[in-house]
Length: 151
View 1 (tube, rainbow, N blue to C red):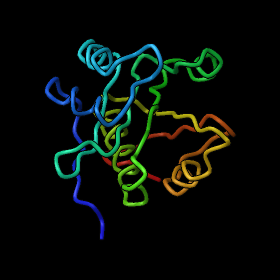
View 2: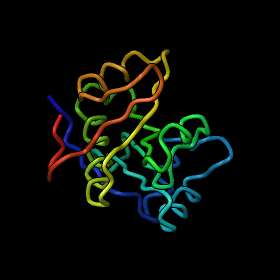
View 3: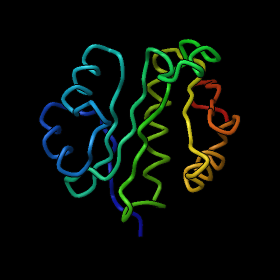
């Protein structure tokens, strides 16, 4: 049976419980992520089940983080730090997090979103392929069309 979960953007009152279950990137904190979200640089989507965070994904509005990718796709919003806790994987949470990011990108009139995947993460690659994301070995992007995406 699938978990009952909901996806929503990170709020101030969520930071402490999120920090108990997920580490942020090196040299960052979830408070800094929230600050950057409030500044319009990113959006931080969190999946919740039973009042606890079970996954998250961020979308960076100011273009890709990696300089090489930024040169190839300047200004392209980048989905990154997509994580679902092990006991909650294969239940549609990763797909819902990607959809939340893409829906927001569409609402912001962005025509393309991108994300990266390591060759050492075949489970993530299978998810992205199943969702119809296109790309090379490490950079994947999707054109967004219509009121809902066309896969």
